[in-house]
Image 1: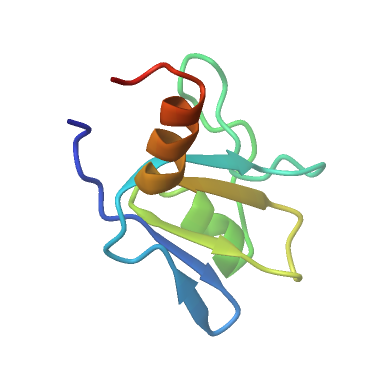
Image 2: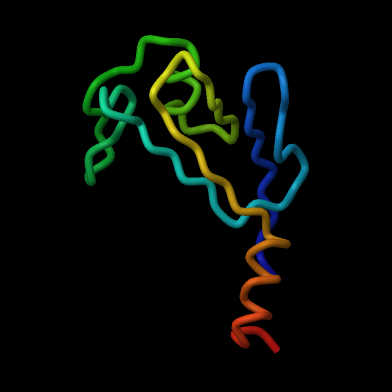
Length: 91
């Protein structure tokens, strides 16, 4: 069984994913790279906008906003398991 993570994804005033089991959240820090980390874990350029700071602060809250260039994709466990079952990768 997959470990439960309580991630929260916000877009504007709407909140997605709270209390859901997420198997993955992928964050792209966009063209400006603010908040991105190097392979060794060092911050390349410090984020300054509040939403970019939220995506770079190593907690379970993430923000997708039209005011920043960060991109978010999240995969709920139910979607991952359904796709794995369909592909014959789970019993």
